[in-house]
Image (cartoon, rainbow over all chains, first blue to last red; front, side, top):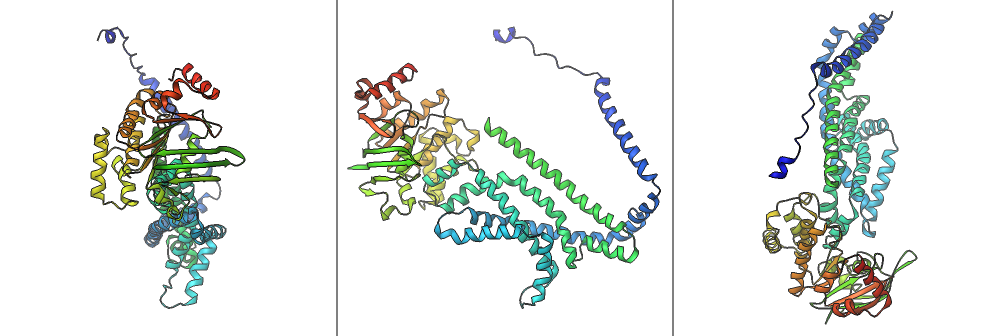
Amino acid sequence: MIAEERRPAPPARRTLSFRERALPFVISIVSVAIVFGLAARLVTSATHWPRIKLQFFNRDAIVAAFPTVFRGFLTNMSVWAIALVAIAIWALVLAIFRSLNGPWFAPLKVFAVLYIDLIRGIPSLLLVLLFGFGVPALQIPGLPRTGLFWGAVAMVLGYSAYAAEVYRSGMEAVHDGQRAAAKALGLSQWQTMIYAIVPQAVRNVLPALLNLAVALQKDVALLSVIGVRDAVREAQIYTARTFNYSSLIAAAMLFLAATIPMARFTDYVARKDQERRLQRTV
Amino acid sequence: MDRVRISNLTKYYGTTLVLDDVNLSVAEHEVVCLIGASGSGKSTLLRCVNKLVPFDHGTIELDGVSIEDEQFRNSNELHKRVGIVFQAFNLFPHMNVLDNVTLAPRKVHGVSRKESEANARRLLDLFGMSEFAAAFPEQLSGGQQQRVAIIRTMATNPDVLMLDEITAALDPELIGGVLRIIKDLAAQGMTMMIVTHEMGFAREVADRVCFLEDGRILEEGPPAQLFSTPEHPRTQQFLQRIIEAGRL
């Protein structure tokens, strides 16, 4: 108690005057307003601006195109959501195949290596064309024939190759001591993978996987080239009818409304992950 | 009968000789401590015994059967009988204490969840860790984590327990609690091979102490003899340095 009394009081928190607090804020607002205002002024005062406005930012056209574009956008997002789940699973299987050692697992390993090399080397657009047009053209009985289905399959196959590599980096980042401990406890290679390595790997790479999810959110628009009536396709149809491009802007706005929150969420998860790592080293 | 018999064991890492014609037997209920400078091959010797690393020449037998025998072709069979605890604990960070302890009994030894949890709780209780059953490793101190790691290995009911510098990563005030557990296990007749830098502990717990240098056992004997009247000049030198560092 005595020692506590002798200890000097903690320094009073420095209070900032209103002026000190408000000034930087006001300066930021004003400077941003001036710079962006000037830029807007410059753009809108261009000789061609009225034409640009009419062609791209025509409010009536946006409103008129919106319902069909939005319906198409729902198709995009459902393909995205389903593909996401399929990719998360299939990529993990590929990554596990690739990291298995031992002669009996060699076929799985070789398959995974070949798959990842091949698929990553082919443009997504080409995959979508191949599967979306190619497979239905075979007219194999019992298989679905819609472009929607096979386009989605192409996206899953393509993105899984990337996601598998992300998973693999996460598995390799798990400390060797974990493998040694699991092995010493008698766990088989497979059990070590499932109970010790994979759960830690998934946690390690979650931010990187979410980044891929954001990229996929936009890339599902590739399905429009095989005739799937998604947001982009619907916008194009409107454009073809009216020679006005505002419907494309409507589609762009819808994609932005989905990707920006998703990107912020990814940042948030990455930050949490960072905090968790820092905590562990303390 | 010898639980573990190591004969003419030789191992290279690349072209570096790390174990040079090592011969060592550990009888049932015996506690053997391996001491020596870092890099003398102590840890590698333990890792050879449970096949965490391969060796080049010689044989290692467990209860008279070579660990390269058909019986141990699936190395899980070996790991069921020889347990090891590491310097860095290596607990699974995504599992709580109870799951860490019950994983191997359930998945390797085929014990039911109920039974393995009851056994785990008994062990946790025995080693003063029962209140931490639901805690995750990162919520525990180093000493507590190491105690959980020992319990995790003991839960697999091994015939031989190997300890690889289990207190080297701990703060000094946490070492005592961990070593006390090992003394209890020794008193209960656990067969153990212990690599340690804690000479006081080795002196107290060991039936026999081996001094290793450059991959060879230069001298071995009962702790009283080896620590008070070491014969080999290198052993004398090593112990002298330990005494100067205030560790004996």
